[in-house]
Image (cartoon, rainbow, N blue to C red; front, side, top):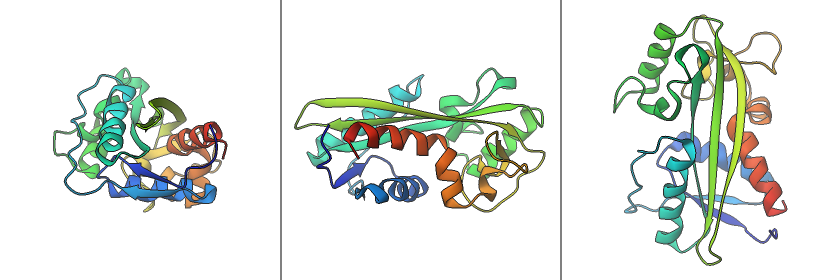
Length: 196
């Protein structure tokens, strides 16, 4: 791929993801454009991260007639046989808050047990008929109690393996988080493919 793309539509209504992915793409000179109002994204009914990410990217790309990206991501607990996985945003119920989902994980998984963050990032360019999916993951362990005010979702209880000192993902600054996060890795895979 050539490096001619200067902006991408992001198929999400999650403001945290808009901010984080925008921050990750900015150094490459790519602006993230939020999904325009009135475009309804398909429900996340897939059984894999790819099955949830691709339909959102296709919807955003076809509705705007522009290259678009969308991602699905979540956390997998080894002690829970990979749950919550694709149901990470709905772990404690269909309209659960981040805090409710995190409390449920802390109730059900043992402290110090293995975790893995997973991201599938889909790219769709309707004018070229191109579809591609990029992946990233980050391994860690479950903290005893939530700590930190950065990040979102399960970050306050996720201690990444690659960081010394036992800091949670929510205690890292943006640069340190982006360097090791599942989303950061998937975005860098995309950028490499785009030649950026």
